[in-house]
Length: 159
Image (cartoon, rainbow, N blue to C red; front, top):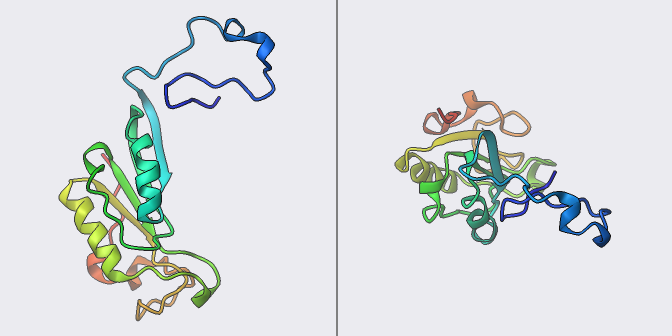
């Protein structure tokens, strides 16, 4: 069942107005202090989407709030929200070789520095299919950490 940002379950689209609130019961569950078993995340491929999506994510009391910065299409500043996140996953765009949009090493290093300075877990998933900026990477999606620069071979999970 989908939850709204207010923590109330949303009725299915075919529930109809005739049921009204009474049809859903008077004591619907609220998130309260959150659910200890829920990991909740969003995708933030660029700064515009980060600014649009992350403010909603950080208001929800999930046990783990994470970002999937995939595909990373530009440098992203996460500093306004890092104190309310637990985990960041990052990766380049997969697709057809050089037709995929590239992820550049300086973008990834800047994100790594932000995440590590905040004490969060970072998981570098892949460098992407456009490997022009990544000499020595041979696998199709840049998914083999052994081929990455040593300072970017990071695949951490939150505690």
